[in-house]
Image 1: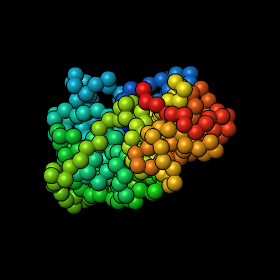
Image 2 (image 1 turned 135 degrees about the vertical axis):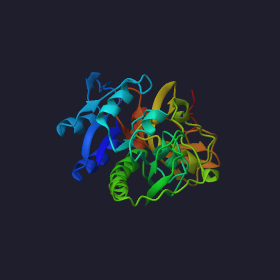
Image 3 (image 1 turned 180 degrees about the vertical axis):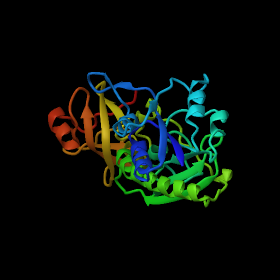
Image 4 (image 1 turned 135 degrees about the horizontal axis):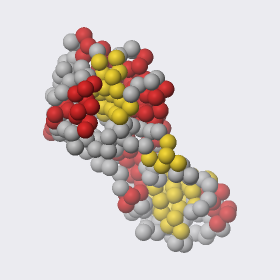
Length: 308
C-alpha cells in the first residue's frame, strides 16, 4: 500500500516510525515549514521531517494547502492512503477524496469527546480520569469522521500534559499500525460518531494560563497540570510574573483568592480552600520548588498573588 504521511511535531514521530517499521511504501511526507527554535532562534527541521530525512523519504513543506500546489504534488505521488497525525493544516475536499482508501487521522482523545486542536491539554484541565487515541476516516468537519478504533488509557493523578503527551504518542502509533493493517486487509469497519456526545478542545490561549484564584482547588491544580509544559500557568507577585508548573490542594488553610497563607510553604487561598504551589519559575530565573522560592523571597502571610 502506497502511503503519504502528513505530520509535524514530536507526537507524530512514533506514527511515522510505525509505518516505516511495517514496510509500507511511503511516497512522501508533508510537514509544516521549519521554524526558528531555541534561544538562538536557529531554524531547524521539524521532528517529522528529521525522521523522514533519516530514511531518505521525500519531504514537502507547502506554505498552505489551498493554492493547488499541494494537490498537484499529491496527484503525482498517487497514494492509496493518506495518514494525518498532528499536521496542523486543514485538507481540501479534493485531497480528502484523492486516495483510494481515503485519508485517516490519529486523534489524541476518545472521540467524539474533545474534538479539536488541544485534546491532551483539555483532558487534564477538565479533570478527566481517562483518555486515549482514536483513528478515523477524515471528512470536511473537524474530527467528525467515522471512527475505526480507539485505545484507552487512565490519566494519572499528578500527570502533566507533557507527560500524557509522551504516553499517548506511542499509543497512537499502536493504533495506527492496527488501523492500516485493517485497511490493507479490507477489514476496517466504520463507526459513526454520536454528535450528541461531542465535546471540544479549542486551541489554548494565553489568557487561560493567567491563574484565577477564585477557582476551586482541584480545578486550579488541574489547569496548572494541563498547561505544563506550555504555555505554563502564571500569576503575578509584586508586579512580576511567576510561572507555576505544579500545585496540590491543601486542607486547613483558608483565605481570600490569591492570598499567601503561610511563611514556610507557598500556599495561597482559592475557591473554598487553598493550594500549595509546589514548582514555580520566577521571572528571569530557573525553576525551583515553592519552598525555595519562599526562602529567597522572604514573603509574609497576607501578601497577594494577582492577575493581569
